[in-house]
Image 1 (cartoon, rainbow, N blue to C red):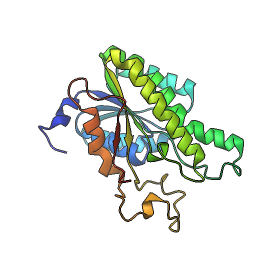
Image 2 (image 1 turned 120 degrees about the horizontal axis):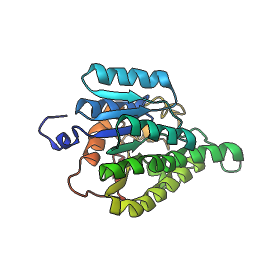
Image 3 (image 1 turned 90 degrees about the vertical axis):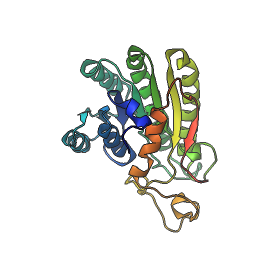
Image 4 (image 1 turned 180 degrees about the vertical axis):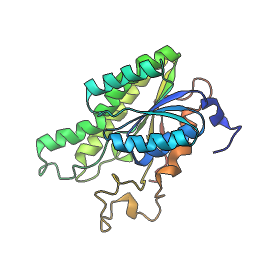
Length: 251
């Protein structure tokens, strides 16, 4: 990242990053801190957050750690109140919580597990939007970016809960973009493609021909490789695009 770039307009702004304890969320939080954005880092594990925040602050940035479960409305409301107390408003939000852990066929799926997996990819976007919009209205506008997936746009066997959850999140974001346009708040989807993170590789199988990690034409990335694209999405001048998809997948 370079000085005197479009990223400079983000200096002095404030951002919330969910799922900030590791992977893409942690990499983005560090990237935001380096360019002078005050970062609120949240995830479920306090120790992971503390490590990321300590790194940002020791590198000359400014960050806070507030543990919260992004699937829990009460905890996300409490997080919004903490941000209001500490910062008074919010400019950016990267809603990154989610996961693909329930991988059975539809007939083999336990209905309770399927619903929980579906909600894990939808409700963090719902709760996140509800938490940050009042803070962004106080700032006069803002940018909301959420982690989507190419699997929201095509079916994948044994991944129905993940595909459905990501597709639902996509439609929720489209609706939010319409509802928030007059507030100067944009809502866009980021599809990172395969990224080497602990969560993404938890169910990785070298023999799975359908895995993007096994596609020789795919760009398999480290978390740091996607940061500049996310900053680019956040730093658009003027009104900027909304209800759009920015994808680094090569499928």
